Image 1 (cartoon, helix red, strand yellow):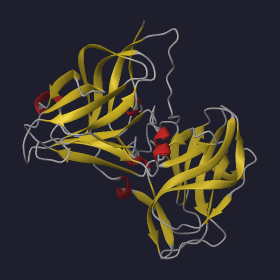
Image 2 (cartoon, rainbow, N blue to C red):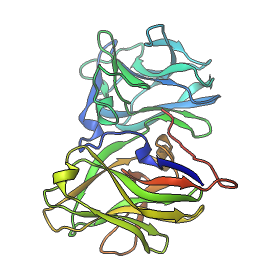
Image 3 (tube, rainbow, N blue to C red):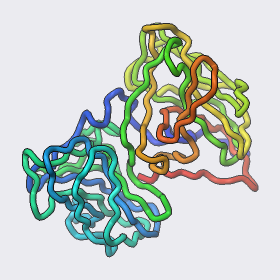
Length: 352
């Protein structure tokens, strides 16, 4: 056994546990130079075939925009020069929501290269009546602040390039399905109590290796005074393996909270299915809230750590579970030991 303490799944990537929807903050690309970009250091060699981003508003009849993967200059700002032999692709907006755009010529990626996903006006500039808006970084994993930068970073151009902490809902995809960035269609929260349908929510997962689970971490934006909830680990037969009750806001606090709880060690077996969930224990009007990501297609879950290993799950009144491939709740198991020698390895899908 290898002694560690790590987070397995979505919560291993720091994110905001906020009630604000991704559509609540956006930048309008409504003139000849407004632009957004996401700058990354590429994770591996390969072929990048798609870039994508969240369109939060579509006004009038927007013209064609330029979309592509570009180089960055000496200041770390995006250029208009295509990266890796790719081509800038013309794209005419048709709908709000998540949009994947296939590059007309793919990019040849080299691990360690810096480049940027960029969306900017085409030959015919948009205007105040015909344009799109795209989601911004402060609603995923950063504050949108221009101080204390993190990398990868998001940038926007109105009169000059402005680097922003955190990641916009912008991503790139290799031809093998590896995603860098956040291919997220929406972020919201679910407020529930014992009268709600469902009254248990969390994630279903298959253990890719045998490991020891000693607790859980979850993202809770807020909850009602006096609300209590159980964090439960189930096996595939709905046996309760471990549980702990939480809810005293006097010492846990409320508002954009990340709660880490522990229980006695529980060995989870490679190839077996488990559920890690919240079950509310207080009645009407006394809500617990948990954040979640929604996705346009199931494969987009690969943008978060081990996202394709997990999927949303819920049920009401201890009935049958409903599994949801287009949702991930902000809850993950904690790992204290991993069995090595013949087992698998971490399969992190998030890379940026």
